[in-house]
Image 1 (cartoon, each protein chain N blue to C red):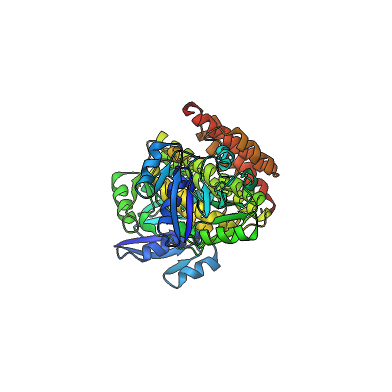
Image 2: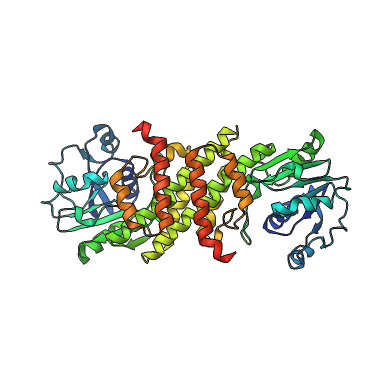
Length: 253
Length: 253
């Protein structure tokens, strides 16, 4: 049995708490955070504290707070014997002060109230030494079968890639919604297409899956589309994305 | 029973053929196209011809060819009594010469070899008159429960929106793959995130679902990301998408 303490009370902390609660190999012995309202949710299931000088002892301390606060939270753990790991995609492992440290980064987007199946979520692990690595692996397999050992440089790139496929993609969905609503059309019309686009690349590379006017250098269609756009940002995005796609595929035409 | 003739032999024609084949209300009496190799696939199931002067009589002629060829194909049908409809998102209904005409646009991305469930695909219909509209509706409900009457202007906007959420989104997936491969990481790492991003907006608006450094105007993270990018197109895209997101959300911060 691994005793774990969660530092942080946000979306990720909640999802981790729920995932670990389903494992018989892990016990969350305490949740520590500043926000009393958020702590209340956890207090029905485990010990909670908003005092960072009253942290229990545990095998692993998982820091699930905003990137900027990780260093400060880790300072409160510098005299602990357990492993201290943060859960951020963008921060280096060395932002943690402790000697026995690591990273435990679940590569997924977490929303309030929407359950995710941890089992297929990639858990990206980094560790200060072999013993810590074994411990974090043992922890990861309790909630996911999708385990990866990844160093800080790789993880930063992965986090950057995630911004493109998640944050930026979601923004494009928003443009789609905006165009629909302007025409009095329901955004529901685009939802099956959005799902299929995401499902398609589960099996084939996006490079192969690429279609559309820019892919086939269909200038007429692109000009017609540009005439329909009124928002300056959307015009600039349409132009830049089309140019980028043309640059990749022009050799094939 | 509706007798239908398919003009065209590409991906969409194949998917339509397969979908209609499952309905007892529709019979594809002929498939007409130029490419003999592609016609061979259909020839096991129905009559085929590569001679546009030998088109049978039918209730509906569905043109599923490239946008540029729709007008020319419709010329071969000008003396027919049946309804002539094209299947394009981007072309006006009036590109068809016949009097009894319409549009039958399934809003989805179709790939070779990947089955799609037509039942949830929005079929966008336009018609020259009420009688034609009824006929096309009758045809649409044979393969989908998701039926929408949409005029040419609306459909063009919808097609533009589809370029953002499908073609451009897929290109962002490709950038994600590229960044992974450069670091020796598997693109598989991003696949659960890609699916979850698409699934999330089935229930909530993309405007609400937006997260990431640009959303919270986290200049430090954005600068760090830009330092990691080497491809000029990707740098320009990161900058433009982040600026656009900031423009939308800055009032909320």
